[in-house]
Length: 328
Image 1 (cartoon, helix red, strand yellow):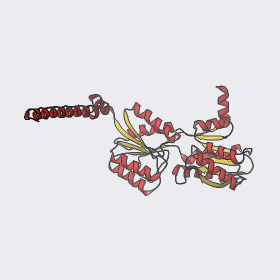
Image 2: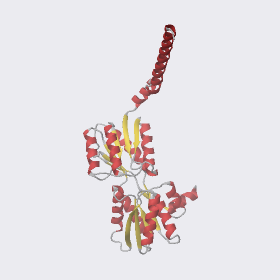
Image 3: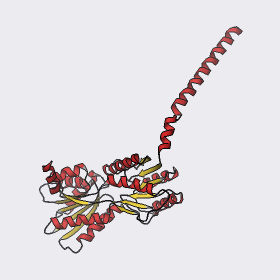
Image 4: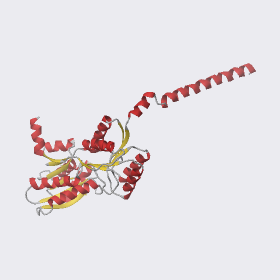
């Protein structure tokens, strides 16, 4: 090959190289550069908050998220939602720590037990990041406020319904989402306080559902097998009611069993309409999420005098649901 040919090849190679380099620069700019519109959108946010939920794939927490997102949009707040795939306190603490490290303006999180959680809340407060607990309080921590159900009073509503709507001896099986969950413990406490002294009410046993419908089905099935005299069930978390109905159907489909549930998820309401669930405690997770964002906004730069913001709860009976269905 002569010198002219070599030179030509070198020139062609350099041209191809520089064309490729320019192309990569243009592609990189278009891919990763933030446009003026994006920058403006980022600046339009008044605050950057995080919602750390108990469990990602959970209908109840989806409603909390929905309410929080609606309030965030209305108030021009950038809201991030994170949660363990399955309920796990260690993972929740890790996610909370991550949100603190991300320097959020405020964090909404389910309160949980343990020194690790209290330490993280303290760490957050030290960094001027207010924490609002939602659904479950953590009174021993330095959280700035709690937004959600008064869980002891909600448990009392369940006990009152059992007392007012049954007669004779009641042998009660309690299904709880998680034994370690503070809100579940408080609901059971309230239920016990309400039925205490009524000799016809007997709490036979408490079993976990691990906040799944299938878990509640298995727990109620096993309880009925072990204690056939159980004639009343109380579910303390959102999926317990439908699970109890399935468990009872497997073991004693023709037995007159009084079933109390928690929350107003669509399946629970359908089962009430069908007469399979006798009553449920209605709490309002969308309102919790909405109010929690509002409270965090108010907490920017100042504390609240009233830091317990209870959302409403009430009992809905199957008669209420059936009556409403007839009028529609």
